[in-house]
Each structure stands twice: as C-alpha cells, then as structure tokens.
Length: 477
Image 1 (cartoon, rainbow, N blue to C red):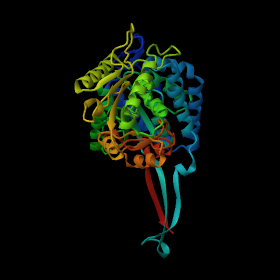
Image 2: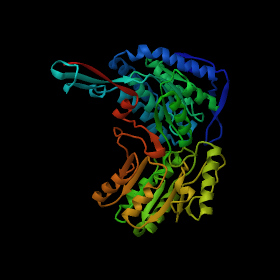
Image 3: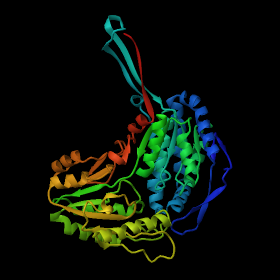
Image 4: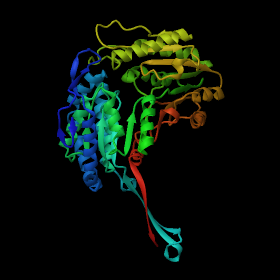
C-alpha cells in the first residue's frame, strides 16, 4: 500500500485480481487492515497543513508532471487497465488512461478566477467607516478527502477526484474498487515520481467492507467523494451526516433517451448504441431507457436490434472487438437475471438475451428489450450492463412525464429535429445533465445528478468548487 509516502506490506495479505476476459490472474492486491486505513487518514491529516500552504503554482507543477508521466506510459498503463476491467484496448488507452492524463493537465492550469472572487468595496455595513465594508470571498481547501472510486474506470474516475482535490490544497486517501485496484497503485507511483510530498496521496485497498468503512468513518477525514451505487452512497451519506463531513456523490442512473418522430434515427441509434459498446454498458450515464414516440417506435426498435447484432462480442485485445466482458461472473449473472426478469414482466427480447458461446470470460451480449412499460423493474432499476429497454409514448407531455418518473436523474437525452422543442423538453427533465441530439459531454460543464443519482457537482471549475469551502474576509472600507 502507499501510505505516508512509503510503500507498505498489508496486514491482511493479498487477494487475487481476475481478468474478466480470460478468468486468469492479473495480479495480487493489498488487503489493508482497519488500523492501516486509519493510519493512512492520519498521514493525510499530518500532510494537509504543509500542502495547503503551498502556492497554486507549486501544486500545479506536481500535477503537470504527473500528467506527463501518465501520458508517457499510456501503453503500459492501458494494458493493465484492459486486463483488470475487460475494456477494449482502444477504450483503455483513450477513455481511461488518456482521460486521466487530460484531467491532471486540466487541474495544472487553474485560472486565478477559480481561486477567489475579487474584492467588493461597495456594501454598506454597521462597522465600517462611512458605513462601507470591504469583502473578499476566497476558496479554502476542505481538508482530508477520502476518494472511493468505481470499478468501471480505474484511471479517469480517480484522476477526476485526486487532481482537483490536490489543486485546491487538499490531501487524499484513495480507496479503489476491489475489482481493479492495481491501476490506482500505478497512478500513485506516477504521483510519487512527480514529486507529491509524503502523505498528500495515500492508497489503501481491500476486498472487505471494513476498508471502505474505516476510510469514511475516520475522524481525520473531512470529506468523502464517492462514485458507485445509490445503495452504498446512501450508507456513506449516513456516516457523513453523523460527522458533518462534506460529501460529493456520483451515484446510479437510468438515463432516459426521448426520441421524437422527427429525430434523426441514425444519430439516435448510434448514441443509444453506446450503452452496448462503452464499457459493456457499465456506465451510469448510459441511455438505457429509450422512450420512443409511436410514429418512430417500430423503426427505432428495428434499427437498434440491427445495430446490436453487428457488434462483435469477444476478446478485448482484438482490434475488431467492440463489446468486452462485464467485470465479474457475479455481475454477469446479475445482468442475465434482469433480462430473464424482463421476459417474465412481458418485455420482448429482440436482440441478445443469450450468453455468447465463448470458452472463457464474463460476457453479456448487447440486449434489446422492446414493448416495455415504465413500471417494469428492468425500466426502473439500474442494470449496469449492455441492456436497453424501449418504451413507447404518444406526445411530448407523456414523454416528459415518463422520463421524469424515475428515482434517478443523472443524464437524460433528447433527439428531435425541432431544436426549439428539444431544448424546451431538456429544461423540463429532472436530470443533472441533458444531451440534445448527442451523447457527448463537454468536460467543463457541471456533472452530477438529481434525486438518487447523487449530491453535488464536479468536472471543470465545478470540481474545484466541490473540493473547497468558501471563506469570507471582511474589513472596514
């Protein structure tokens, strides 16, 4: 483990990390004890004072060096990411390691306006001369941040927490997902080589729940940044509430894709189809719940089914593979159980639905469930796999109502040839983000969810805000 600037053997030995494509051993991950996790939090607390007092330029220099190291080792790191996650080689290079390097670069370039609001000397106040008080609002670091990261992207997700937290002067304890923690240790090596001082970044892992619990409960921790399921997020939020800890929660999603009769179906199919291909559907932002207006419903189902059938499922190391495995045998079984539940609820499986005939690996084919209703479990619960459900609707009012009839609200999508209507509908959707005729994202736009999809916003300047407290300094004018 990486604690207080040193590499330490774990008290609990090591556990096996499995390649979901081959079912072979990738490596062995440290199994931390509760005491070691608390020691990591204490190391972060000790390092916080000196690190928080460094200049923004000093911190930016460390982040910039880390970005260059990660980018320079992209082939090596991507191969590890592919083996741990089952992502295709192209995805591991571009969307995992490549995005991680980009995020460190982004937070090495923090503009002065992102640090403080300029003084205002025009407000009346009872204590100032001539009734005028000066005021300055500055952003202070929160303190020690526990970062609990997701298994679907062990590079971009931790980088999206670590980089802005360090840029703002915080110190971190990173608890990676148990399925694929080895990449996060490589990131720690890159940060160590970049010159991060001892204790500023700490990494502890484990397959037991007590590791994450200790990293959240420690009295040395001021904030928890979590990406994962809503159920786990709710338990973390309860602990944070008792300790008045700040929290940033990016939780589950059941993104609605509202497709109107006048939509460009080619664009809609390509966008919705990313649920099948991007991380094999293991992504909270996926448009997994398609609401199709009746005039286009049959054609959309037909084209989505054809699209799904063309995607090669198999070894992620092969260049023409589009859909790799899901993370584990247990998760494959969970996704398959939802498909079977959909059948029992009355959905029609028009693509996929049967386990691929492959000798090894935890594979689920792109699966399309048609003739669904919004009250079915497959339409309401996050499946987190390459499964799309399609629900018909009649008019705009019903489409909006169905889209909002969910516990989740992370990212929704609207496809329509009428741009005015698309933006009108987008404003009515109860989601943290809405894509209009696209599934692309702007990496400076705020990211986070409504309802049970999370608390807070990050990405771009919003991440700097998330990992900071606003302090007011006032003086007589």
